[in-house]
Image 1 (cartoon, rainbow, N blue to C red):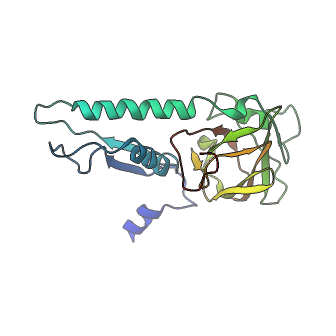
Image 2 (image 1 turned 60 degrees about the horizontal axis):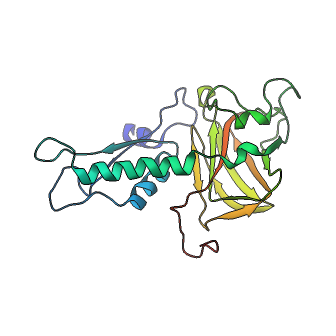
Image 3 (image 1 turned 135 degrees about the vertical axis):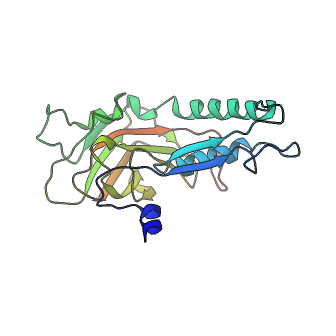
Length: 232
């Protein structure tokens, strides 16, 4: 009973405790001369499946027989860091307009949708009205040229609890992603690859209490090439 509780969590719990994903940079937990570090594509997949799913990633990097980190592992770590900076250093939504289904208390109350584009990903957030409905939305709108991206980032104001239970992402009216919980961070790496559009709408269609979104990002991942991507 206790194992099941710890493994699944409690949506009515009083403390937010993200899962920890322990993964090795190598096939096994220890260093072996015959083995090589995981490919960059594998590490990025691990990142999206852990950090991108509201978890903490603990990446094991074992020392070799001299007690040092091997040159191959160091190089792969540098590639991994550089790739993450390439993907997430630019938020294409930053230069866009933003609107929402409602704002708690109306305009100029400190809960406007524009706050999802500021640099504070914890304590500033968009808050809709508590109208008794379980559906809300926020929309990013391009000001001139088309938005071209393949990653959608959503973050809740986690200091006030994890609330979202179900959401969907639309580009110009077409659904491109869907998910359940968000928590501190949800990364949708779009299954069909790069999409282009003028309007990106995030619909919250299920939540425990009023959803509070602290940050939204649209990013381009040049390392993601799913089969059938028409933009290749």
